[in-house]
Image 1 (cartoon, rainbow, N blue to C red):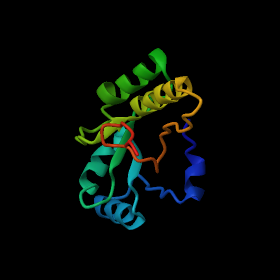
Image 2: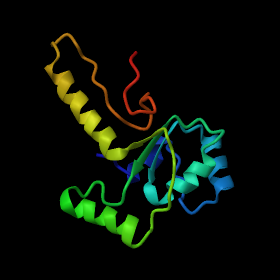
Image 3: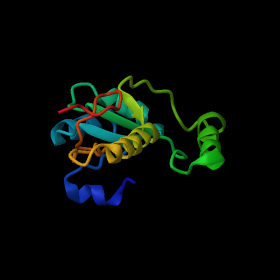
Length: 139
C-alpha cells in the first residue's frame, strides 16, 4: 500500500496539482524525479509539463480506484461523466495504479513459488526501475 504522507521524508518531491505548467515542469526537472503518481483529475496538467523531464514512469490513479468494488466504480463514473471533473488527457507511457499494484502482487506470489535459492523479488515503488508499460526491468 502506498504511504502518501511518508513519501516526503524519503526525498520524494511533492508537486501540488494546482501549479501551472511551467512551475510543475521546473519542479519535476529540478528534482530529477523518474516516477510520479498523479490523480487523473490533474493528468492533463502533467501532460503539458512532462516534456523535457526525466520521468520514465507515470502512474495514474482515479479517485475511486483504491475503494474497490462497486463503490470505486461509482465514484470514478460520477467524477468522469456526471461532474466532468476529469479533463481529457493523453499520456501513452502512463500505467493505471491498480494495474501496477496487481503486477506487484502477482510478482510477489510468483517469487514465493521459486526455489529457495532465488532471493530476489520485484517490488514497485517510486525508485524501482520499471518500463513505461509497468513491467520491471530485468537486471
